[in-house]
Length: 114
Image (cartoon, rainbow, N blue to C red; front, side):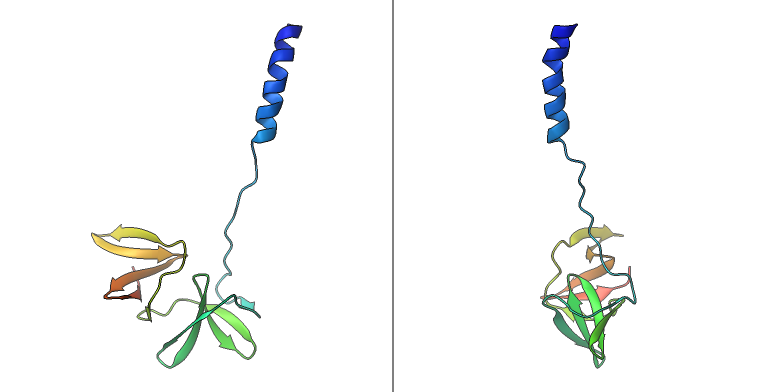
């Protein structure tokens, strides 16, 4: 019994120490949250409103802060945010990222409701 314990104890310890319980959670600001700085925002003007897009999240600037908003339906963007996924809904191909759906239109992408 002692020999078996000496043999399996190091294997058990190594397997326990090499497994990680750490997980990565992607957090995005909730709608209406106000932040003071954005990381390399892209500016998109739609219906005379200036929107800022950073990390796939849409903002509107008010005073010196940025408030998160719903992506404006119908706005055209030239690039998709990093980490987008391709999905098919009723046979139509869409691109989605953080709850926003984009549809390809020529060289651009349009924000749509699905």
